[in-house]
Amino acid sequence: MTQTVSMPVWAFVLIILFAGVTFASHFLFPSVRWFFRKRAERVIAKVNLRLQRPIEPFKLARRYDMIQRLIYDPQVTEAIVEHARKEGIPENVAFEKARHYAREIVPSFSATAYFGFGIRLARWLSKSLYRIKLGTFDRKRLEQIDPDATVVFVINHRSNMDYVLVTYLAANAGALSYAVGEWARVWPLSTVIRAMGAYFIRRKSRGALYRKVLARYVQMATRGGVSQAVFPEGGLSLNGLLAPPRMGLLNYIVEDFDAKAREVIFVPVAINYDRVLEDTILIKADNAGTRRFKPSLISVLRRVGRHILLRLSGRFRGFGVASVSFGEPLELSKYLGQGGTDLTEEIAHELMKRIAAVTPVLGVPLVARHILQSEPVQVSALEQAVGESIAFLTNRQLPCPRRRPNELVQDALDRLGARGLIRISEEGVSVTEIGRDILTFYANSIAHHFDDPAAEQDDLSAAAE
Image (cartoon, rainbow, N blue to C red):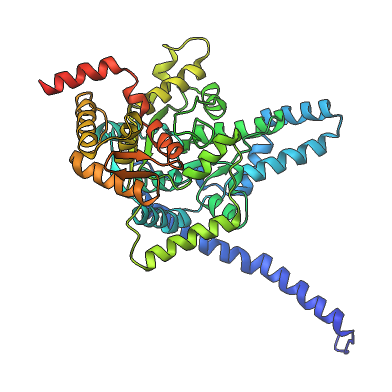
């Protein structure tokens, strides 16, 4: 036992490495994990004290545990067996495919990342780019929502800033879980987004196995009380109009609903902007008849560089107003008795109707609408038309600007003129060649408020009296 043993240096190094790994895995790593777990629990307990809706245990489960729970779900298991039969492949191969889908979908929520980093970044970014205004907002009604219910915010999709804006404004309500498209599945953005609690979805996937894995995750999260945010249009609006709803995620929630287990409440949210950051990209995609609007890296860097130069030179004056309105919540249990055979479709259209009803009317969309209606138009006539429209909207209790018409018109003209979208001459204000599609894009966002000319004329007459 006391004799000296000689060995090659490489063997000695391997023994030391294996010993180090064993020590770390059995003693060091568990202690470190325990330390950070306890620290995270203290953070969550502190955060829950100021949230209207505390973070649900489902959201705090380890990602590995959630993946295991998802792929061993009985319905997913049945889908795996069916997929293997149809494709003529071994079941273990189909199982690994389901595991791959689960790993792709399931997030890894971090309360520290969400409330310590995400909320602060969302607040800074929102306020640095826009003047944030709340449109329709019944605080009392929203505070009366059952705290045990699952809340699903249903939002119209105008810009990728929607994620940031709603995250900031709903910070006190709780941690939102977003359905994010494939555009964000790039490193390191994907890691950050997963830590914020978002889950990835393949918009164009038609595979039954993938749909079942996604459906079960959404249903588990809904039953677990996770507050969610969905965009029923399925993508960004390319022309400014509200698009018809897609049933996918909504259908997953409705078909698994059990009123005895947990209520589900849909909250319509309408967003509008004086300036959508991606407007020219979206319009170009619309004119091309395709939804492919991935900008090149060079164009993105050019825009970011131009923005930084404007900030450094003190010439950046913001992108105007970004406004968010909250509509009348829809309780799923109460709607069940009123619905017909296609319940999901009825709910989706009802939610889109409620979103449309509270869509904020801002200066640039309103001025763009009147310029397009009667160009060239004198500034004085434009101010009068805008004033009449504000009176019409106010009379119908619709969300509209609070500034005086002359201030609103001048600000909008300055912004449109700075982009070369309008021309002001002795004849009046007219649209340039490059500005017509862009002004139409913004005017479309509020067009539904003025769809009934007869009602508009009656309301204007009533307001005048």
